[in-house]
Length: 308
Image (tube, rainbow, N blue to C red; front, side, top):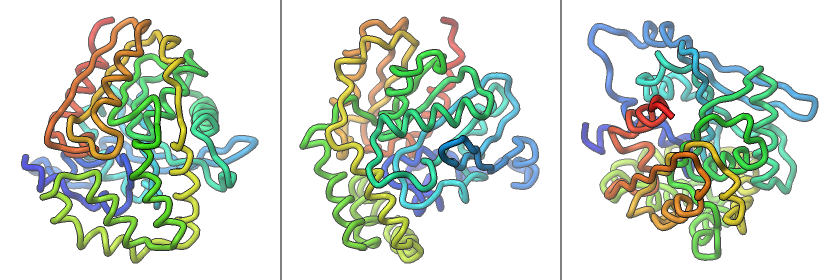
């Protein structure tokens, strides 16, 4: 499958690590969307705790549990639940998969640590005692904090295009997005995002969809995005990576123009006490390799099903 064929409507709803693309436009012959959704039991729901509510989607029929934490988004990923299920169908026999938004009505200052606590609380509220976790970009930062603060929840961990430390240089592009969001410039935000996270040919063929999506964004969504994106500024768990003992797969891209390929290598180097740590670096897919690399889901599944 070419990179261009992986472009789907999710590019218009997810910013900075939507983890949703690869395979979404490929369909099985003689199988309708309704039949696939029924087979994978795609559901969108809201989990409620004493302090907050959080939207999530669930699909798959496997006995194992997979929890995915996407990066920050301007709009909810829930309208794309069916396409997410299609993208991750290779995992649906082995796993029941959960994809989480951020909490609704979050505070005006909302740290990565707070996001991790809320996501862990949402997972527990659904009766999940342990799962294999996948976090991409900022979602990977949240997954790292869960593995550090709530290790009993995490069986295996996969980190895609993420970082354990966001310094001034790494925050530069994210800070640009924050500024555009605060200025109410949805179009500028979406185009800046697309240019940064996708290869040039993908970005050029996505401009029209990005601009169309920007026209649907509300002031409240931009304000929320700014708060969530700002949380990455100064994030640093480098000195806590040694507390993670679970098996970890770190996946990055050499040409990541948001957080940089070195960020993935530094995570792997810091996981000295992991019972099994793997590092795999792509090249040519950019920050959004989790969306574009055609073998990404299979690579994850191979790691997750490997004997410990």
